[in-house]
Length: 329
Image (cartoon, rainbow, N blue to C red):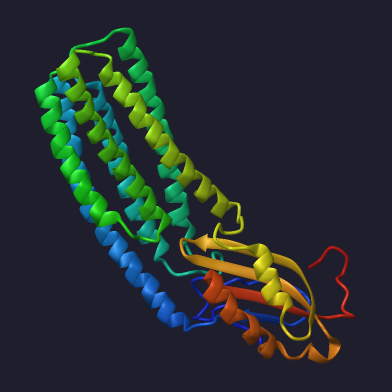
């Protein structure tokens, strides 16, 4: 089997240049160029979504900041603070998408896809931070209630809700974890606007000033849930955990079911970036089958891609008599 070049153009963006003993087979079940083009188009669409959402978010930020100051509404000012975080997060997401499109190098053989994950992690941490700030401010307002100008707060919240719904429409249905983080930011803003409107209605009917900070706490609880999930998923990718949709036992069964395979070990499945999954494994085969690399690979790669979306495989074929050198795998 001819060795792969480290600059193989089909694997340059997501190459796994691993060393090891015995024949190695790198499988790509479908046309890599076509998939690379599809991902490029997806990122182009994601960039357009983020730019439109950023423009809307910046307008809402200014409106809610001015409206919050004029109405003295903590919920509205809290949402304006959240919006400021959103503007930063959307800007960071755009930068991450731009960097992720840079080609792989000999030093960064996976390319820069992980910038999307780092951006998602930063977004999640920012959400947790803003939620903490909202709770603190709400506690202070509960200790010393202040009057709220209900008409101004309701008008600005209604405008913000409408713009947020448009932004959510723009950002929905993207597979990128980066865009998902931006979507969660905007979702938090939309819920904040709904909370402000409900709080204004209750205060108008009852005169209860504590409703405004109480709404802020409820908003922060929703934000924390989304932020925790986003942060957890980003950390899982960075720790190279098995993707949530992949059943590792089922993957092992697929590999072990190949004719001639007697054992599977050193099996790893991980996420490179949103929608890009990789697998490496050692297959122990009957001695007469040790040279049938192409047949073995063909028997597994289609199932791995069709069932789990794993499109980059590095499989080492070993005979039954082969022995690892100490702890080297």
